[in-house]
Image (cartoon, rainbow, N blue to C red):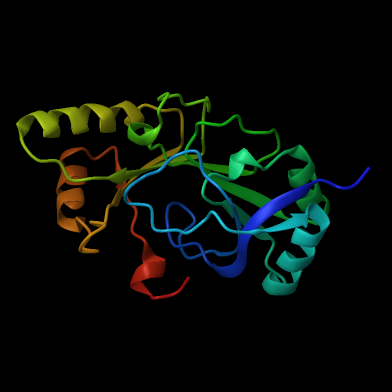
Length: 207
């Protein structure tokens, strides 16, 4: 029986730019494909090459050297990531972080889960995760009193999701590229159970 293959969009070594682990060296494994179509998505994740788990680890080792942290991202990595892939990473000595929209079941053995919910763009509106290590929510602008109330109701839903950290991240306008940092900051100052997450990799102009 041939070994299972995973469709990999890219593998690269950089610093984690967002959330709790900001500034930490990690090897990013971007798995192809997503089940959502968010208008503010800034990644091209559909293309990719088929690789076995062993081949992925070999490339991670080549690029990351002594780094022993991997971030599975996408797209939506849990469309493909399974216990076999996680076991291969762990056997090679890596801690595995995953960033997920939460609509897929998470296999056992993930060392850190970042839930980045985007239920507005999920046709079923279903979150399958029961808990995460951090919630990182994209803070989108609203127009008009009704939109603002709806947005705040949706945001505060995630303030109570079981996680040790809850972070709001400014959202860049897909047309202008300008992010709503000041609006996000103002919201956090009024709702101090949230913490600010910036895309520092973009500020530093690194991957």
